[in-house]
Image 1 (cartoon, each protein chain N blue to C red):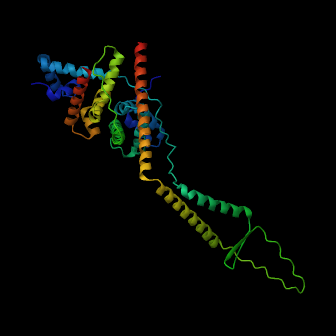
Image 2: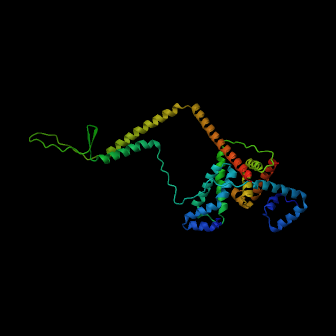
Image 3: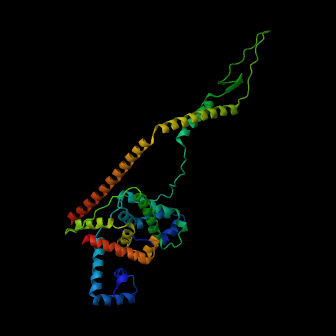
Length: 206
Length: 171
């Protein structure tokens, strides 16, 4: 009985001891199976002649360097966030702030207010009206500015997108595909050339 | 100085008991066979290095869930297999550059090796992987079947078909 599908297991010695002994006896007597085994081993040795390659660098796992979660901040939010941060910083630096709401107009005064002049005797002077800081109103103002800015950005981007018609998009995409393919082919060529040089160098050393 | 191999299971025990740096000893023991497996399957050395690094990151993170600590390498090969085939699937959708095999083998050894290397690249990925794992990585058919998620008979069939194609190319 020929080896057939047990040929590979015979060559790689993955049969039981009894099966290997039986297969050996058969191969010694059967010219066809002997030729197949020799052919199989020839291909195996031709492949095995390909040397292992060394790693270009060591793989090192750094346990302490755990990946930090990425904080994703869309670019379009950077400007309003920066503006708000600048405002907060300015408030902190400038110091006292005075705000006054009168006749539908917000008046904000920074720094110390001048000391009130002592009224002349008998003169009628307007009373200095001071109001508590309305932080809620300041926050609402900043938020309103952000919303205006965002609306402008969205409108600008929509206009820009509308201006790019489908034909131009396809043209850009095809250019990108070409560049990507060209890059991959360059890498592939580099790998083959490197491999050839290494093999030829080893041969010349021998 | 030549370092002696340490049993995978004992290294894993050390890592799980808090000595996380010992994992690099495990990496040192397996990086070369895993890297060469990836290089032969993918074909690009630079990219193979990245995939190799990625292959070792997964078991490092999930070492505690490993059931059989004395059989670390099959798990590693399985991860490498998934990583490589995920990458090969991505490339398949983009473009395909056929590699023309050298139909005539030559007498000088380096040229013959190059011919074999090129011929190996022409095999379908499933067949190429079986040939690589069997010939270069010395894995058993059952281990390859577990890596590929295929019956042993299919794995053997892939090996025969791969060898037959290589024979016809190299004749």
